[in-house]
Image 1 (cartoon, helix red, strand yellow):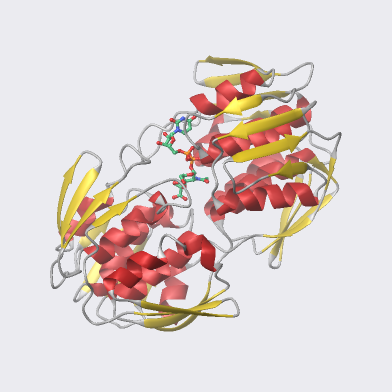
Image 2 (cartoon, helix red, strand yellow):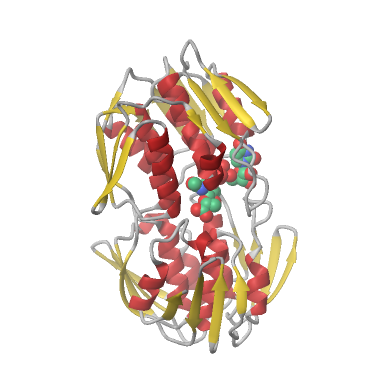
Length: 417
Ligand code: EPZ
């Protein structure tokens, strides 16, 4: 169990580089399973979830290594199509290997990814789509056994919900399928576009990513490609929240403005100011923030569920009341306990949380229970007078590459134990 010790009350200022996007790196690493030849991924963040993906690739017989700022993967000698439970357990996102393995080998065997801190994480949309593409799938004793002996065939797939993971699994399965696949009501997140860009650079024929309808013309084979992973919009939102809660003034390098199109307006409504100049974003916050009355999480381009906990930490010290509606996950308010121990005034009722802003937060010992919840507690601790101990930092390291170093470089007093 590693911890952060935060001495709050320091105003953040200075410049920071935004890391590569975790939720882009993970599906792209799975996509390398489809290719023959060397893949070079630049701007790949150093995260425990990325390490878990590299371990899975090596287990499958691929060469996967980190070389300086890049990750290099060669899947020519892929020899297995099974991911053991111990590797599946490390990361729920490994379900995205299902579509890739099925497309490359015609088989896939992996244990059910299971729920996580955010509530049950069903994969019914994934399996229904793959069955429609010709996969025979059995789910028994916690293991998913898939076969497509005659290969996968293109299909028209209507998603009842624009699931990010289901959209990714379908794209990966369809890239080498026989014929054309059309996904209706596809997820539109920037990480989906980045995955499609990587696949098209490898020779795939994918059209319409970022729109609600994506068309994939299956091809015979894909070759390795070099690719720059997009910046992590949720890490950017985390650093904005850290600056907002400390009345700071920072510059973030390597930000893609339209990826933050539903996040920036909320900070501006609180009284923060942003500016953009050749890929850098300047961000400054007033001493006293105004409360945003209602914040609802939605599929992209709506306000992202991954930033909900971060904005809640800031809302805790805004002047006024903020209502949060969490429309994506069943149970994504676990950070509320920790925020209340730090002095926040929050009431939760199902998928709604009501935050009454307070003037100050006070140091305490708090426990993180999931990735973005951990980040939320750290943001709040930056404001709390005196010392806060945040335990459960292994959750944080799944998605943030040295956050304590980034925050310290901006003037925060954060130490990792
Ligand atoms: C991805 O998870 C991200 N993870 C999550 O980020 C992110 O919160 C989520 O998308 C939404 O943007 C990765 O990319 C690795 P979904 P995913 O499928 O694919 C329900 C983080 O903090 N659903 O869009 O699991 C599901 O239960 C992580 O970086 C079904 O019902 O998200 C959930 O309520 C957390 N059946 C909702 O849809 C299915 O078959 C959204 O899930 C699939 C999903």
